[in-house]
Length: 348
Length: 225
Image 1 (cartoon, each protein chain N blue to C red):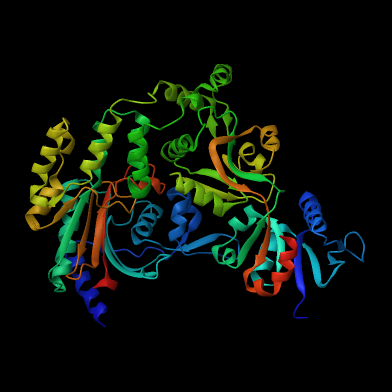
Image 2: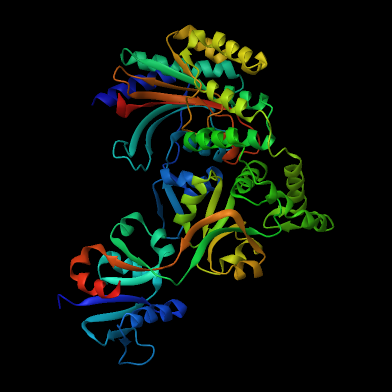
């Protein structure tokens, strides 16, 4: 079988580069994942109930399964791992496969961002070279650049949060930008209503909880909401800056220049796009890589570099990226940075 | 009997009364020859027919599998049912009773939350500060998921409920709920408040038909509409 030969060769590269085999569980606790990833994740999962009524799912993603294993093993397991196995995803489109054969690597607890990003990229690129797939192309994005841009804009905190969190839902994001443009956020009357109640509640025990929220929490947010400007004058300009930013699409060696131009044009500080070390390293390996600011918006856990590699017929054969928040959202008490990538054997 | 028309009507409460009224107004008088609690009935002047009293939710399911041909049930229950089931059922007429809204309701004391946009922020707070998901108790998981996700609220977890959903936020089973309400009194009495833009569906009773049976029902339906 062709794919078996491929995977043997790829695994050799993984091992040579110091990655150690990890075998994450196939069956995962659905509620555990929903509790941490939100209800919309359920659409992707193939679930069933066991005899006790517990909801179980087939691992929808090997990165998530690997992280869960890593946390379960209390970090004693090796943190530079590779896996070879299947991921199972439900899909409405008949084009998508339900069973995906994946071969991937992860560096969990990544301590040096640019070194580890480069390591993952290099290992994946070398693996693909090893199995003699030619005429590949790479597309790359960096989610943190968008986050930095939003942080630097002069808009209410509420808007910053919303734009950052909904970056992952391009359609809804477009709605948001339209709302930003037309300044139709929250109706001002809505805020006034409970001012009387606000003063009443100030006299309550601030540690009392109402449906899992402390009185102090509710009052703090109410107060903040009143003080946060309802409307601001530069909304149209800001929406345009965001739209323009998301149009940046160029070869990777021109990126720095283009970002500078963009920052100058919009009177933004140059420092927001300062950290381009991974991008620059990648440019050294493959200068034809295309960078797009609009790229990588379909998997929510990415926080930094995101990349995909395509074969000559434009089919995705590998993808990966940095995900510094995932382990924490899966239950880790401390922040654990991570970066990884997987090769999709079905498309080879 | 091939031409027998099987009709499903709600077996309980006001929906039952009003459904019977609707049939009577159209000169179709349901009569039961058994006791008051008999689940079967006939229509006096329509010999080829049979009425079965069923749970409103079950009327949708039985229309889908073809055991009944016509029925009356709520739009909320139809819209909540799986897509495959909905495709087999046609809404013949929206009726002027059973009017109620499926809504998102939150504890009244959450004074900082007035709109779905607020809820979205609070759901992120739950995730980021408490590392748990906001829990939404509901009898309508499908309608709720579609509504919340379309409004940008994604960080939540559904808690399925069978009834008395209004209690959930105050006994620690969920933080907020979605439920059906006609006057809003039950919500208010239980210290809950509907979000300003928290209307998921305007529901009402509907005359529903199994699509497969449409041909044989034509005459009968003409007498009803």
